Every structure is written in structure tokens, then in C-alpha cells.
Length: 434
Image 1 (cartoon, rainbow, N blue to C red):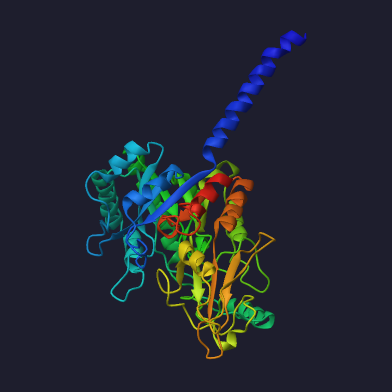
Image 2 (cartoon, rainbow, N blue to C red; image 1 turned 120 degrees about the vertical axis):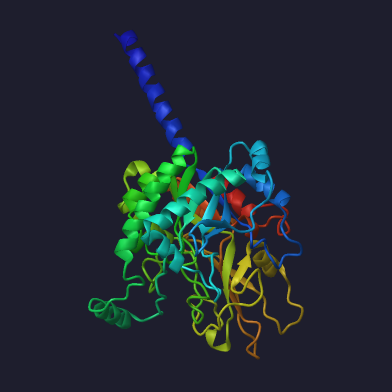
């Protein structure tokens, strides 16, 4: 009797092994974004494509950003893409990597220097515009040798919410029941039209043997614009914007942690990774959990501290004075820039030291600060991601059965190993934890 059961036991074990192998192949994915126009403009020398190649050992997907849309004919326009057979050459060196082109990403700006959402909505509204866009996508992917398209669609963003006490927030919520604060009066129509575009693209893309992914941008409401079950049916994967909840552009007077893992006291309850992930999971079939990737950054958000910001550095920091001017861009510091600031010793006694404050709970994130001096100068506050906090978020993704991590951005990691001698330390820490 025991012998007759052995074949069934063996069959069961083989089946379980096959299931495990299938699942393990769908999780632990690393989606690496490469923002080509940025290229760390304030670095000693522009980052070369050759310097980015070592990172591809850790990436499953490399997403080039960003293409835009021509407002006249609604065809895709590529900005700063590599010429010649660069992608084909990379594919030979890194056959495990799939290369995607991303469109939008808040990089498609208008004459005033702000993201142009109008043409992205206009494209959705007209079937002929969608048709022009679809045809141009296939042409562009074939032209440069991309394996697929990523839609980082520029929808209107939620309006910033001021830091308020409990009574003011309660009154604002009550008053909101009787007034419309929608950023888009046609949001329901645009939601349906975007689902239609994804369905049409899915047919074109898969017929051409290519991939379709969706990237949510920070402060874009999925509730307003995304039919989640439909989007997951059409997309090969979705990258969630679980970062930049607090930025000096949106909140110049209040400095705070830009990407806490869990909810923080007296904050917007949606401004944390856990809330955003759970919102999507609640509308997602369990079989599609592995299509979701959480966004993790390689940079920090920085504000100027004033004399009125206090001296403790404990967030939220009141009466900040907007984006700190130094860095890769106003209000942004790359990881090597932050690391260098933390290691610097003051040149004189009047210049305060930049102090790091860790997070032993692994729930919120780390920050560093330098209180303003007696003259009201040299004040700096930065909330950022480092290799340890990034690994914590990768562990969170793994624990929740998600597909992996979408890393923004390769160019802002320590490409040259100037901080601790190791190249791409944040990227490595994420991949090892996955």
C-alpha cells in the first residue's frame, strides 16, 4: 500500500515545485527607470551609457524616459533617445533585460515649463487621435528596437492639501461633501477612454510581440482615472507611484518625509506606501498581485530650514522656505550628493553639521537636517531613501506578494561608487532583498 502511494506523492511534489517555480519567476522583478534628459546635470561629468551598463545585471526591465506627444497630430515624439543600434547592442550583452520606452512621465512640458496634461486628455477624447498615437507607437518601438511601451500618462494631479489640525480637517471634509473639488470634470469619461486606449494598444502591442506597462505618476488619482481591473487585464505590469507624497514644489512651507512606508500621525492617510498598495490590492484579483510594483527612489527631497523652523529637525518642519537650491535640481538631492553632505565636516564652527536621524521602526524613513544658524542661513532639511530603507520597501513588496520594485532612477544612484566604493548601492540593496 505504501508503494502504491509513492507515485502520487511524487506527482504532488512535482506539481508543487512547478507552482513554486512559476510564482518565483513572477515575483522579485526589478524595473529600472533611466531618465535620459536628467543625467545628473550637476555631477562632475555627465553619466555615460557605459557607466549605466553595470546596473543592468540587476534589472529585469530598463525603461527609457521619456517620450512625448505631438499636439498637432498626436503621434509619439521621442526625446534624447540613444541613436543607432544601442538597444540591440545592450540586448546582446544583457539578454535577460527587456527594454521599454515610457511616454509622459511629467517630462512632456508646455511653454510655461509645467507638464502638459491637456493634449493627453485630448488624445483620449478622439478615436482618430488614439489611432494616430497607436500607429506611431508601434513605428517608434520598431525604429529603436524597444520591447514595449510604458504609459506614464500625464493626468491632472490632485491639489495639495495644507497641513491642518483635526478640527480644520474635519470641517474641510464636511464642506467637501457639498462642493466639487475635482481636478477634472470629465474624469469619468477620461477613465473610460483611457481603458479603451489600453485595450486598443494591447491588441496592437501583443500582435507585434511587445509589452505594455502602466506607470502611475505621483498625485494622480487612480480612483478618478484608472479602471484597475481593466488596466491589470491589459497591462503586463503596473508601477505604483509610492513616493514624492511630500515635495517642496507642492508644499514649500512644510518639510516632511516624502515616502513613508506606513501612515504617520496627523498626515494625509493616503500619503504612504501601505495605503497606496492596499488600495490597488483591494481592486485586484489575487492572481494579479504579482503585476504590481512599488516605486522606490534613489533621491531625496530637500527644503530650506529657517529660524522659525525650529532646531530639532523632527518632521513636519514648519515655516520652511521652499526647495533647497543646491543639488541635482532645486529641491532634489541624489543619493551620492546626500551621502557626501553627511560625510562632510563643517569648515568653521558657525556652520552646523548635517545630522542624520534613522528609523529603527522601519515604518517611515530617514531624514537629515541642519538647523538655520544665528543669521538664518545654512538651514537644510532632506527626507530621502538610502540602501537600508530601500531594502525595507523591497521586503514589504515581497511580503505582500507583489511583483517587485520600480526603481526611479538609475542616474540618481551612486553610479560611480564615490560614497562607499560600491556602485549602485541602492539598486543592489533592493535586488538582494527581492
